[in-house]
Image (cartoon, rainbow, N blue to C red):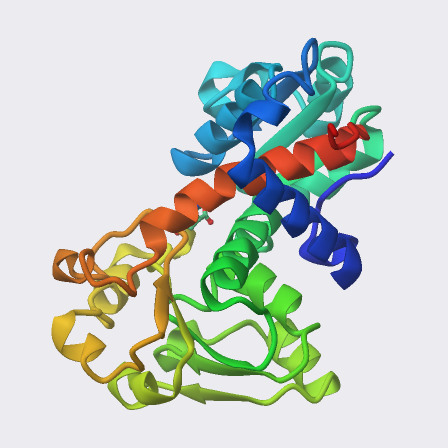
Length: 306
Ligand code: NCD
């Protein structure tokens, strides 16, 4: 039995196969409409979500399966003090696969260790968010035609943004990737990410100016300042308006530089960027459904139909 807890749980080759499957699903939706008939996914969300939870649920419904779960800790027995370990044992009796989001780092790993069904990490605190990364990889590969030889800028809350940590992890395995890490000093990537980049000799620079970085980027990954992970509101208020991508800044970018964002957006991308053909963040949401369909099939061992 396999889980998806970290993007590195799958080799580069396996990720390639998963993205191939997701691409086939994208082009042949009807072929996959019943491959998971009779299967259930449980979505265990202890933290708010719009896209990720509904994307998992849509993915399973598109495959012919069904969905159970809860959308907040308040509406689960967590509010009575039940542990994640006990909850997953119970859920293992009801569902065939589970996607879990939790505010504590490592919660999905704990769940997987007690689970008798595959567990997908749908975000654990400020740590990792592997299925957002699969979504990001599919978006980049579909729009740019490759995942290697690129300068990738990540901008905003690089400290608490789990999507950033997972994406850096995943992209660092492809040849010719260079990172430009754009943040205020207080929101730089955590040390373990920097150490990993140093150890693997991956070129990167840490800068503050988005304007200066724009011309060299092939991908710009914008992120929101993660208010819920700040220790005090004052720091959040100081940081939240630090970067705002607008039409003026887009003029400095390459004509084929795509803007990604895991969403939700707060104010870091002005709405006047939305109709720029390089704004890819809503297309990214659609790719997320296909990639989650491919992941559910893969973890359940469902074969690709002929
Ligand atoms: C991200 C998350 O939850 O980490 N959202 C998502 O899953 N698409 C990013 C965020 O909340 O800022």
